[in-house]
Length: 147
Image (cartoon, rainbow, N blue to C red; front, side):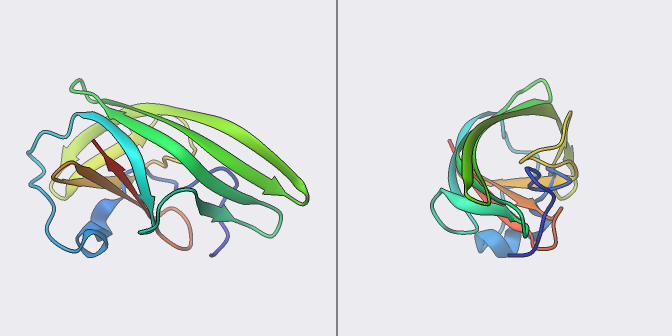
């Protein structure tokens, strides 16, 4: 996996342009109801925990997480990271909030602070699944959440 900024999964959390390819089919129309609480269910097609960032000095694994998409245009992500640097391993909670808006291609997410959820990511829904493609690093990371 290519290097990424430490503890930052993507610059943008508006990420799913590559979703049609990632999900294998068409996403629900952007006008559908996306609000609700979603639990982390996959990272790059594999069950968590999975590596979401790796540099020469550090590896970051996303172990758990949930995403709440509010009807008022707000979102909140709460997750747990396992960070390995040399022989040291620490577990770190990460909470990120911000806003979202509909676009022609899906849902654009704008976090108030950088972290696992990056700004400029796009998300799409298909049934009870919300897929987010983080293109902020050298290698895109696809994160799936389920209601």
